[in-house]
Image 1 (cartoon, rainbow, N blue to C red):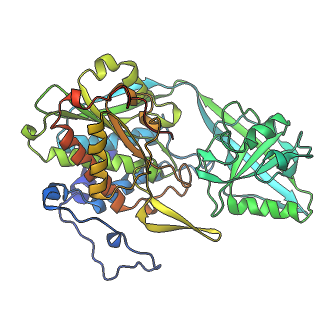
Image 2 (cartoon, rainbow, N blue to C red):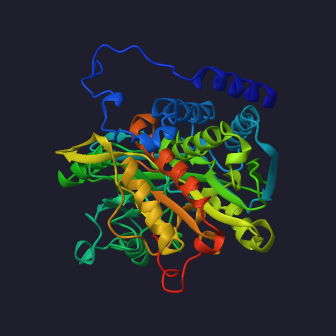
Image 3 (tube, helix red, strand yellow):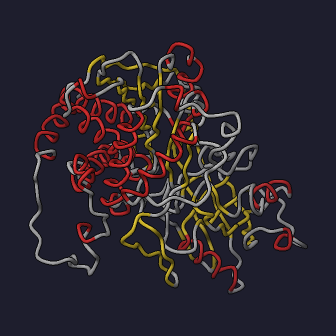
Length: 497
């Protein structure tokens, strides 16, 4: 199987990466009336930046599709828990795919670093139905909450609607021993939503009032299937479901129906699982290094999270591999990091071993959630636009490095928020303060959902980010390490996930 996957990766590289490959087109719209991606807004390259013109968004989007194809090959419709799940064959295939790319591009010192995983959570099976008015309803979007506890056999519970779950919504309601339904609004996405601890605290409130099960309806449009936890310290069994399906339950309760929930969730906890990061190096002319990271794992197709970052990392590897070694002042170490969604052991290892692993590191760039279309809500529908969404951003470094980064973003049209975040979360969070580091990241409504598909990842955004990072690497290579280090006053700045 490994030889087969590697061969496919190598062959797809030889075809998909042919310079000058084009697609026939007769209109700026597709058959559904959507604007085609080569009509999206792009800033023209100046004469000085023509060297970055070979970084092409269409070719980068091909890489995104190839990585998401790995996820689809590992689909399990029985539990919907599929993708490049950490420690599974899906993540392993992603690692093999990257290794094949590294070898075709001539990277050296290609190696893997293995990590033992703690006990891992997997849904073994689940059966959830809603009964009202003599009818039984089952919903495709409904899945157990990530890392939820199992039920003790089949639960048979009265359903209670508590709106967004504020203290006012719970006031006067007896929810003990019942199935509580909470409508949660993305803020802006699955890791920040209104029912969570940082806003209404509705999930905790339901548990504190002894609910027997917690159902979170996610979104204000569409019908996302989502893998997301109920939050730290929540032991009550729970599930997430999409907005449209949730509205059905709300309508039944609102019509005065007696609504009951039958719920059985069986969980498998697997021990002895492992994962691994993959390393490859483009040699430079000194013993100093620049690190470029992109995490491998993801839920469902995981096009934004993190096929988009993998695409940028591989494109940077191709771009710099095409240059003579004499033009690379520093080694560039590319790392597909392991197990991001289960604790990021790959980047944590770098932090724990920073005295040796990062001894001569000048810069780290994290490629994560780099390009997603801006969202517009139009009535009950979430619409795509033809521009990449602005990203949160972080720089740990000198004022000169910060200015250099922002200048590159401006040059290529990488939109960011107007305030740098106070920490770099995501894959680089544990290691970001150990050396000069940069990242941009966006975590929108589709993150961790079945709609994290290539259609949401714009070519223009991939291209702009890769060009900006390539220029930053060139500029950084003109400076000594001491010139990149943060001052005492700037070392406390940075971003939140």
